[in-house]
Amino acid sequence: HVQLVESGGGSVEPGGSLRLSCAASGAALSVTCMGWFRQAPGKEREGVAAIDRAGNPTYTYSVKDRFTISKDNDKNTLYLQMNSLEPEDTAMYYCAAVPLPIPVGLAFDENEYNYWGQGTQVTVS
Image (tube, rainbow, N blue to C red):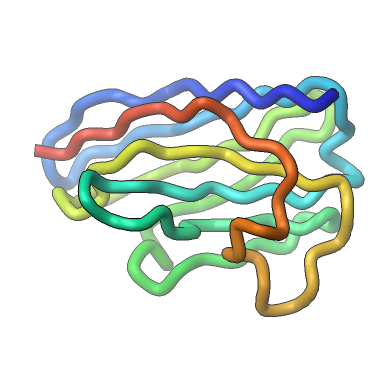
């Protein structure tokens, strides 16, 4: 059974930075595709960044060049470094995982992921 626990959220001013972490247990990140999603109040959950088993990242356009996704296979932890934060980045952030390859173009399809964390709140104001 895979468990994901996010941490690192908080409140920052515009232009600030945060680093989110997602500690995984029950699955080795070296064979797991992982992603960060977010959901703002009144909006649908959207994919933000994803990383495949080889460590190749994918970003949604709005965060490209500001956010960096990475993983430490030894620590079994996924990270999301968020710089130049904007009020529009305010949301609950979730990490997700699936121990299978994800087809090209579906990295931000929620249905591709089996496991989800409880989320960590990020507020930019």
